Length: 232
Image (cartoon, rainbow, N blue to C red; front, side, top):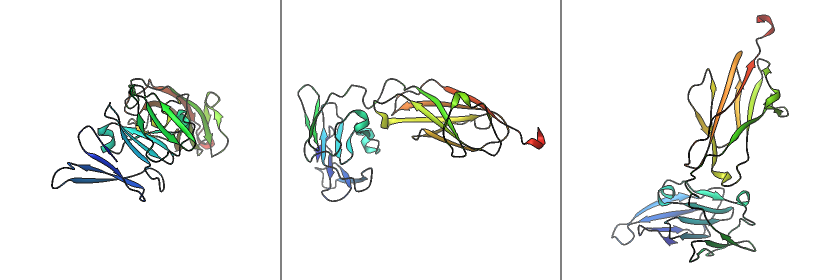
């Protein structure tokens, strides 16, 4: 368990895959809010609160970090091997904050020393993404620059690429397909299932975001769906 900067307690259960926020713990009637860990049977092995007011949570699949508002909304930043951790199965009660603000914790047979940047939880820049390839009728991916015309009735999947590895788990994209779709659809997966499209010209527009950071500049790819032979 740990106490946050508001005086509330975060308490992890020993055998259950969840944890609780205990608000007003010193009052006669504290308020308890329950949370479920991400993943199947994913226990919490440590809780920590640092001088920034951030919360840290260790689990079998890596460490999670959040500020108080994010934690109360269940929006934790997941750090694992993609972010450079040499091990992810964290050790019980191993969290320690050093005098310089760096974070230490144990995972498997490793001791991890982390220097969190000030914008770790609220990135101040946008990641870059691009339309990398298309898969047609669940076949092998074809480079996007080589795809210009697609047969009508083809099931289309667009693959989005990104060289963003820092905080990769916080990466998400939003897209729209013009002219028929003017509103944005947001998702975490980098594969966009467009389905079977009508004949004519289409433009796929994509943007990316890290956590609650700004959206990136828009990238776009245009292609056309051929008319059936009896209409051409």
